[in-house]
Length: 307
Image (cartoon, rainbow, N blue to C red; front, side, top):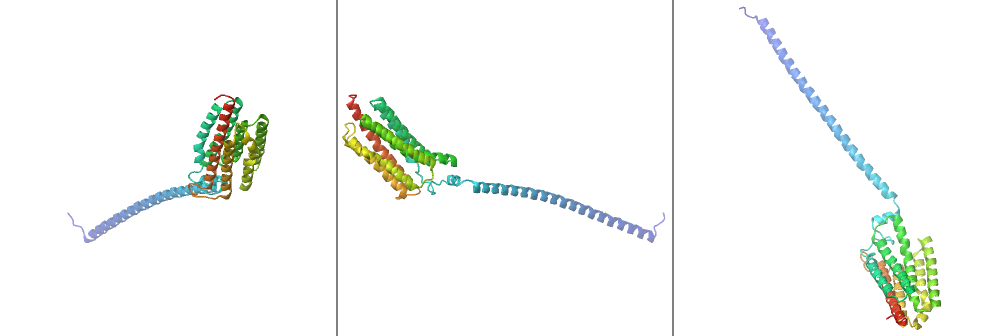
């Protein structure tokens, strides 16, 4: 066995070192490649996450912009509806419309009673007119003031609300006029309903008329029946009690209208304001007139010998 020379040993050692260095370099290249692959994968994942986040943010921004555009583009009435503003541009008091809501079923019950006890067919129909007018007034007012409606529905309910008081006044004088003879009864009914028709036309055509004009027309119409109070006073089917009740009811309407026009007093704006006082005035006036109609019916029943 021949031994290796020192030169061979040195060469082998060099080759071994070279192989070892090459292995180290190969390992380093593999680690770098793996690190690069991890980096690329991380960048891809980060890019994907960033893209999703940007897309989500853009979607939210677009949604917010659309909502802002819708809010900016809606009509002022819609803004009032969404933040519960009343027709005076103020937040609705908590009791707005609830007094009329409670009176509506009572008006229906009272009307049915008056119809049942009326001694003649004509008077029954007159009481039905009064019941219908009062029921429309209180029910529509409750719906209009309590609910939050679209601008179109609000406009319709507001027009009906403004017209209703004239319907109720004419509807009140319709059964009361039966306390007079045939001529004056027809004169009152024709006159009152003709004035009502004119008032309704004004309200339909000029819904944005100033409040003071509404108040003046309302008061004039409410006291127009004063011209007939002398006839009612001397009528056997009416008398002083009926006249006093009619006058008291008219006074309640007038005082309520004055409070509405002046917006004073306004005791608790968040709960019970000047508009609620106006509504209470209409309820008090209505109650006086219900009693007046009842007295006329009872008197006519005695005259006809029914009871």
